[in-house]
Length: 220
Image (cartoon, rainbow, N blue to C red):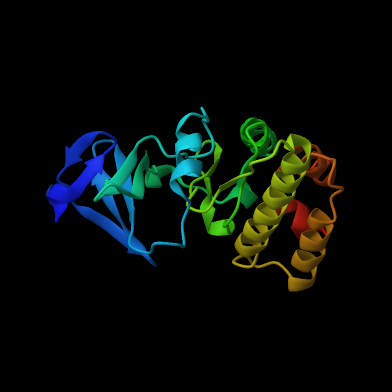
């Protein structure tokens, strides 16, 4: 029953909220200017300790839990910033400098999480979202290492961002009238980034004088 829910220390009536959507293993409710993600599966999501760590980290471009939800005193979800769906854009058409600035800002937030030993686990390209900035919007399976390996964690996270970006860019390019060969070459080229080079710097070199990714690949 909803009366058995607790949002942090306060009893919480979940039934009064509107279900925005469902996902495999849970539901998303509208809640004020946020959402509440509720997990039905006991295992396939972030654990309470890691979620609590994330609530203490400030990030503009990575959506993180802000308050934890409990059912019968067992962790089962959290509140999260709501996605602004009105301004979503394809990143292949975003102006070069705007795109590079957004990747730079996101990588700064990733570095802040890496300093707390947070690994960006369980993501795919659908979890990257562009709206006047590039955002990671699903922390459901992030992992906090229990040992101090900040440099190693940041290398993992920047590599993960490279895979997410390349997958999203290739996905968007496949919806355009561009030869598959050119798209494949670009995807391979972007994924070949050295692990110690930022995605922002590497994409800057690839783009050269091209105004955006779409125009670059059309010229290949």
